[in-house]
Amino acid sequence: MMGGASMGAWILLWIFLGLAIVVAGVLIARALGTRREPERPKIPPGESPAVRDAKDSLKLRYAHGEISREEYLQGKIELED
Image (cartoon, rainbow, N blue to C red):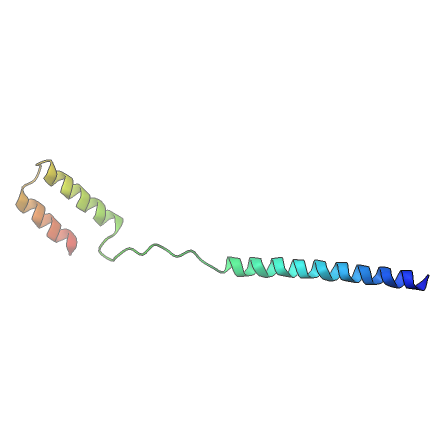
């Protein structure tokens, strides 16, 4: 009878040890996963979304004949500064 109680205690010990390892693994995985921050897309200093929109608008106006070549080139130079 003594052997049965001792064996039951060992089984419970192994179950608790296994659960502790699983819980520790989950906690470590969550801690390591939350430390990473997504990288922000790198935009060149002169190429903000507003500048890109302005360049596209300038190209369209020139393509539609709304502005002359000189006005287009001047606008292009100003947007590159």
